[in-house]
Amino acid sequence: MRIFVDIDDCLNDMKTTFIQRAVDLGYIKEYQEIKEWDLTKFFKSNPPLSDEKVTDMINSIFLSDNFWLNLPLKEDAVKVVKWLNNKYEIYLATSPWYPDPDCMKWKVQWVEKYFSFLKTNQLIFISKKWLLKGDIIIDDKPITIKKFDGVTIIFDQPYNQKINANYRVNNWKQVLKIIQKDFSKKDGYFRCLECGRYLLYESYINIFRCYCGNLNLKKL
Image (tube, rainbow, N blue to C red; front, side, top):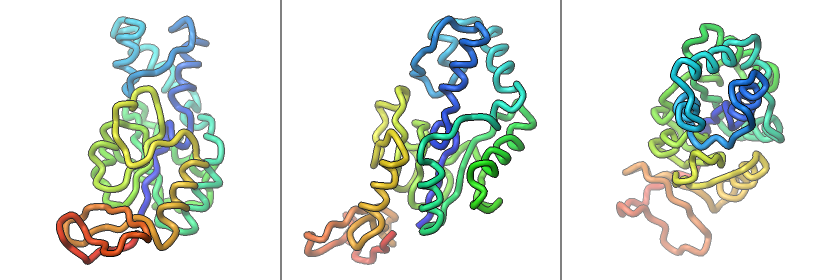
């Protein structure tokens, strides 16, 4: 089973760190709940800031020394990712902030700092993560969850409340519980080899077939 894990705001707390930095630098007066995934759009509307001030704020924070390297780790992230890595094919998938030529370098060092047990080829830089081919994606970005062709686990955020996912979580303990319950036993998810649909099987079902009528199913 192949699993993709987003880094920013899934493994770390990027946006909350950014907001606190914006407060400390005087760009905004107090901490605010982020209701828009795109920080540029959020700050242009709530509170309304000029395009010039928003650009200056984002550049000064994202381009500051070691912003990406020093992002705080979410609780239990390392423990759960290590467990997943021992059992499944796992990749960290993240979108670089392209205006910063060193962003990818800092992200690589951040991964090496906390997830040294992962190999270099288990880190993927990609913006359109829904194009990745796998079974599960763990992410917070609305469009990624909407478009990914597989099982979706969404990290709960104010800006993704209207997005439907197979699972919604607040922490990594919940992720582990989901994988152990629905993917690590006889019951669980199967993929139809005819149409590609994902199906949840439970032992009380007598005849298990896909909605397309196919009986050729593969256990994840």
